[in-house]
Image (tube, rainbow, N blue to C red; front, side, top):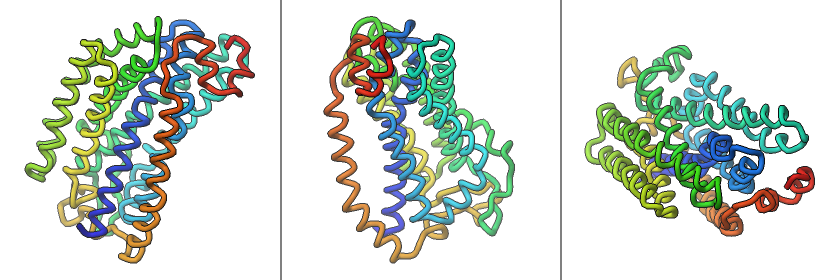
Length: 346
């Protein structure tokens, strides 16, 4: 395996890791007002991701930074061509992040409802936009011979990319519901079970449609078939496991589904990184967008040193906050001493 191919795999792993970990965060953000029909219930739902969400978002930063360093041509074309998509994504992530910090700072129903709406809207818009962006990589966008994006925002709103965005949103809903089932007790747990059961068949149908459509768009033979089949089998298993109350296995199945969906896009792309609708001659590939061999060697050394440290720290964080949450006092404790101090109801 060449360093260029190795770093394409690394970028795939980073995007996959981000959507697997942040996917259930997005799902909980969308569902916190559904499973928590009163303020204590909403605090319980939010507390399940309180210690985790900001660490999970680091994967997005590292994925973008890795693209910038390893494939500057890819980064330049994608982030300039998809500028409005990523600007809206940034707004959604900011609104969502601020809502975690601000919603408990006042004892006002209207204040909390405003930030709850920001959390729900940001958690919905972010995965939709990410799915649209990733879908466009494989569907294709107008790219000129100078590797410049020559289309408009409307060109990004094609059927395949929008369907990919909707599929990612549905997966986040199921992933988040499965996480809430795994992490809560009491009424929030029961409502999360109901949501997971209702969302599971719709998500399974969307993943099946995505898999078929992706295989029709990709041209990588068996390599493209494998992750698509895994995605369909995993989401079917998730739907069955949710119905059988196998909480841990159901969450693992939704994580596997999310990973397989993301991997199927990147496998369908390789050795391209962006498909051009103006002809294969202007496709962006791992070769014509990569950094120098020396840069990739240096990045490999740095990644080999620090990536295991990051994984170990994040794994330790998940271990520390592994317990279920079933009451408002427990939710306040899980959110940390700052949240407890500023929220007397906790």
